[in-house]
View 1 (cartoon, rainbow, N blue to C red):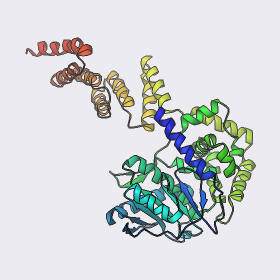
View 2 (cartoon, helix red, strand yellow; view 1 turned 180 degrees about the vertical axis):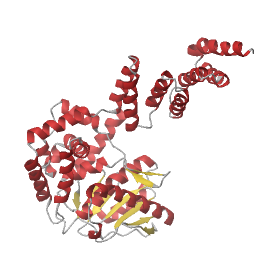
View 3 (cartoon, rainbow, N blue to C red; view 1 turned 135 degrees about the vertical axis):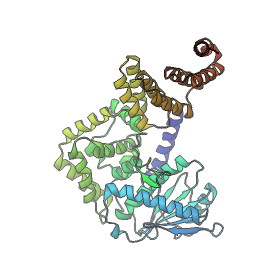
View 4 (spheres, one colour; view 1 turned 60 degrees about the vertical axis):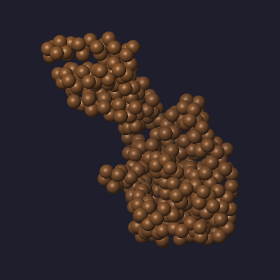
Length: 429
């Protein structure tokens, strides 16, 4: 939890810095957007150009021109990934691709040092994360990234900032809540190595924060959030950012199709020639024409109430399992797994549920996955041993139970030893 708080505090600091600079003057300035804050306008020192000390290889795809100092193959791979991200974004936005005036430029550095040197030359300062430099033309604008060493962090920042680049290529001044909300909405979109396809995955990293803000009655009214200026967003940053994501999640995920229809129609209303204020006003007025403010507010809050965090689902699942309500427990852990497939907890409990239902093969699969993900080895080995014993695979049962006994003699010496002795006795050994 402490690490999460520190990370979010850092994110807020980045956004606050970006919002503190005047937004606008697109005719004379470049807009640099760092993950994940709204755009900050900076006067460009010079058109984007790679430093001589960093030779760049290039590759082009359907929508991107990619430059990388890690070589041609790296540029080709990144270009393909970006095309996949573009396709996911446009499944929602449905922009006319023929109106894209040029390929979108992305520049990748293999380390933070060259990234900093490049930004220092181009905009006179460095950034802590990826930055999108927005100029009056698509041709001059570019997304600048660097290899972070951590693939998941790199992918999250890329999905976020590539969306900002995508959106501003078609709508230079989109509403802040749409830009930031969707940028976070897409952060878990990833390339699937098995299929080679880029797939959307739900991002609920801010759900707990939004639910806390709701319990404290600190959320903006929906219509008020839609009209926030850059200054307003900066002053209410701790609410603006997570609530923007929550509102996008509501419009796209609500079971009420009226709200789904609203977001698609709203996107269609965005004008590439409008100012930020004009685009925001158009969407807000459209919203109020079709939805009563009080009713929509109530529906939004009800939607948030119905969304469960990973921790809530696990707690609920453990309680239901303890009450021997296996069906409810199964549903809770399955939902928890869809939100965080890297945690061993849902897999372990799903193994217990499968065992209780007599599906020993499935139980073993769940237990082994939990073990691979870091579950307590003696506990899980004991569960595997009991599961193998129940399915009359006695040699495997003995092996698993011995591992449990060796791993935690104080807890499993007697319990595991008793079953091992029983197996030996029954087999005549």
